[in-house]
Length: 149
Image 1 (tube, rainbow, N blue to C red):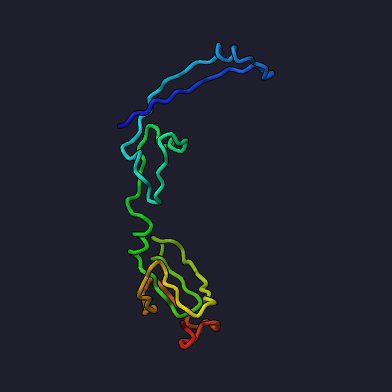
Image 2 (cartoon, rainbow, N blue to C red):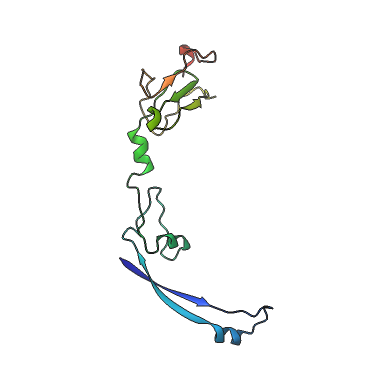
């Protein structure tokens, strides 16, 4: 493990705050301490954060290792493709008690007349009956097939 040398200055002040510089030098002392840092101390996190060695945010990794998720957000998005649906409402049942509760998402039709690729997905496909995504087909506000851009 790497070690770091820190110098901490401790100063005692008068109760009224009127202390001369010479008195501060008399009451000042220096403490030297080595700090153990983990092996992942200088690795960037999954969001790309990497701080300078003198940054105060590194104090959380003193005497413990920095746990880093090896999967970057871009890689996680590429693993789970975007599903395009035809209705205005969609939800995921998330595999029952083992997953999250049912989440409803209201889909808004874009105001522009062109399709924007989501997260670089070049081939958008309509939903074809995947078990993880349900379409509300009885929705009165649903967009007709000929209106889909």
